[in-house]
Image (cartoon, rainbow, N blue to C red; front, side, top):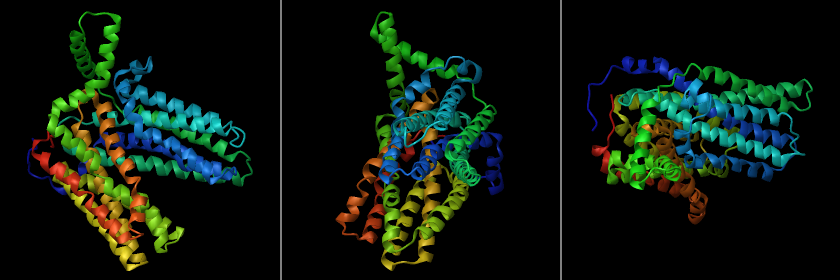
Length: 459
């Protein structure tokens, strides 16, 4: 049950960001965000400048799909220990370093490839980077959560904000380094300037691994003992001990343990309510996001306008209001913050309705985009803090990956019909944005029905 406590002064609340654990979480976020540059803008621009078609570049983007299914192997990340690395660095850091080494080797191979002659190999290496990055995300999120105590709800909210800021920092910093380095190498006459750029980005990977050594990992003995107890319970039901039963017990514990634990901790009806909320919460935002660029172009804004208002201003407001969103979650509590973020997302979508009905207006465009980024920042922090507080520390990686993937599934599967909805409305953008605002209501109903029975401790 949630306890109501006396609120801190704003200065006391803000001081949570100066906790040294927040710097570690910022670094973890950067480690998670950096690979997106490699397989996103850097790869796309490399292929473009090598003369490959837009279709080829577009299809290459399919490698991002692995991020949506990383929950499938998350149970293995919770259980399997890496020889040597786990003993030397710890379970979580061992996995991160292994994935970082994989990414580094891939960058070295990229530096030796000619895209036009070895396109299939190039894309295969990009896929390996995506798999390594998605696998890394599983354990990065687990390590972030485990930096904070189970009863430190306020610190968890601050950590969620720092993780988001860290992700954007890693993503943007990687983009700046890659673009400026490639431009410099091109200007001084290096022919394979992108290949050399990937070697420089490899140095950044090495520096991040050095920074990772300052991120402490808590002893995982308690987690492993709990996992083994679950295995033993399954083994007893199977009967006699033998190699086959041992393997079955391990696999059953690895796959079903996190799910059984989640339902046991929350109760069946509450667990279903949580899953419903997680699936539905950001669907309206996803519908808007999927069609926003198309809307901007149709209403008459140029690429320059979109770059200034939607991208540049968007990044600044995202970072600032992510930190402010963390403070809001800390002071109001994660559940109140979830309701506030949901209502704010709906109201923000209505600003786009006003823009659609008023015609091209740079002032209204700027206001709508800024408030949309503010709402997204608040919603992301609250959402990350919410699911971080729900996970069982015995299966941190698996449960977080599953909950995050369910949220992603809701956005990706249903929002894929956003274009069809606009066509069905005969291009009535105003009505479309009203519908996206209404989409948040079912998720808030789910949350309202279970809010008093959630097993979340906030301090």
